[in-house]
Image (tube, rainbow, N blue to C red):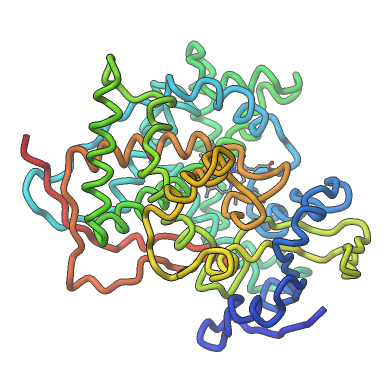
Length: 442
Ligand code: HEM
């Protein structure tokens, strides 16, 4: 397959979108700081997704990406937490959906939006994962850990693989990892000393083998892993949606009308998973926001479906993938492909709402949480994000509260970009971006 050599200097990058156009429907390879990366086009995703873990491994992909050997990020081999998310979190989601909105300004004020949303989501996820009476230090640890982890990963990857075991000690963020792990172990021990409250700590502890039940460091590390998977990912969605709504106030009006319409038919006037699902315009706005901002940086790098080939693979088009190859889905490039999403650079908040109206099959196909070979920002196949249903409910509850109770506007002189790259193709929302906010009267 074509080999394209890149560096990590973003200015010198062509980006994957032109490459995808150059090699439509073909596998192609990019060389970057992370080594050769092979991109699988949507037409071949079906067969790649079906490969067993012993042939194409997510765990090995995660180990390499997170440098777990050096950063102490939890070993992806332990699946108890994923099981809990799949089996329990999904079923019990409604009871967790209580929102405690921190007070935002009552008259127009310029605020940094991201930190506020971090505190809010950290508070809510801590109740679910640790328990309703979680220690406050956990909130700060869960927010801070992700940033420190990615700093450590970034610097560790500057060293050759063979010397990382030694040079990691000169990186301050590697030391900070231990501080966070100690806090997490303490928090887990404390949570286990209290009665169970449907939280992850107790539920997962029950599933663990005897020798791990009192291993608080092991469980603390897993909680940190869960924080990485759930916190900033969900915050990013909320921030991006609110920035999109501030840029396109016409959708705010439509969403407010939709909220009123749904609540009118409800006796209890509280949000549940069922009535949140009726907010189809909001769902569409969220999906459109994810399409434009959820999948990697400027089309230049991979974003999701990170896997390592363990056994030789020959795809139906003849492509041979030798063991050791890292494969990815070019998420950003696909979601900006005009043949799949017409007028791809335009924010069309009702794009998916209109698609859902086409037929009964389409009604389920274009929801925020639906994934397919052209929508890969939640990954793909059997390891696709199990937390996306929870993230969907959490983000919707918060956006509904914000849109219902507050007005929002852009800060005109704030020209900071919304998306900032951080590690190997991932994109984060700009934490310093400001927004005008005021409480609505009445
Ligand atoms: C909008 C928010 C979120 C986004 C964009 C997101 C994205 C992703 C992506 C891209 C993957 C990799 C899937 C693959 O490679 O096929 C993933 C995996 C995962 N996510 Fe999420 N995620 C989100 C929220 C959450 C939440 C809230 C939780 C926890 C409740 C969670 C838990 C996980 C877990 C445990 C995995 C690993 C699954 C496995 O290895 O089988 N995620 N997520």
